[in-house]
Length: 371
Image 1 (cartoon, one colour):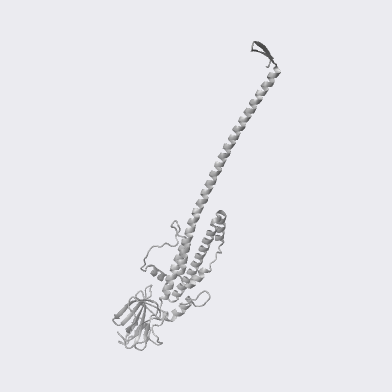
Image 2: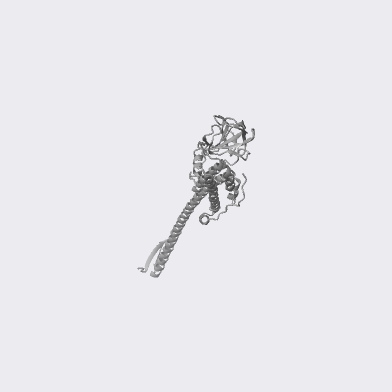
């Protein structure tokens, strides 16, 4: 492949011959091939480096894209946490306002609540592991729900205690609750601890129902006659059939007669609202007080009035004076208890109610509560 070759060169009238042996040609060819290989390797290295650089950049961009996606998720979680925090703040505001409006013994019960629910603990653990920054909010929510459940149980206990007392007096607690539901009410709509999506946690809704039932029954209990309407010990005429003092014939007497001196004070038998002050034939001067749930007390034969229509009176408050107006043979108080317009025997209320109410007001330690 590489025979010996001769070349001649003419320069300034002289001719020279140059002989290139096969060995020299082979060495030259080897040098050229080597140079080409070096050039090729260099180009390949440059191309590989460029490829790797592009690949590394693509990988970096991909990782950045994945980081951005995760960041979006974290942002989304944080947005949810803000929503949860907003819900908890509204719920806490509701709890504080509600507790401020409740009796002192209910506040005491509620303030001692601690989170002891195993299920709530599991929830807190899971939330804390998944979203560490939400752990504190989860613990707050667990405590709030424990508070609500404890307060609900306490409201149910008080309502059941009031219902038992009402039954002992021969009345129907369910009827009292129904009567409360049909009372005239109004005002702006304020939903019970609604979440940002407008829903109501069923535990809060249950608490609202329990508190409403407790309030209705305890208010009904307070409206039951429990105070002697006159400071006298002798009842001259009982409820039921008796001999009429004017005709001498048997007749129905719808109340109790308390004998007393003219001008002696007459007291409201229970808290309520005065609905009538005036005269009714046979009764003379009377005062009627509504105690809610269809229960009304009537005070007759008065000599003086110390109350006016629309006035709210407390149990034991003076509303008039004993007299002998109307169909009467002498100074006394005629006292009636009416339920939905029908006269019932007042004696069981006056004799039993004080002890029943005292027992119903006892707290868990057995000591009577104030009021």
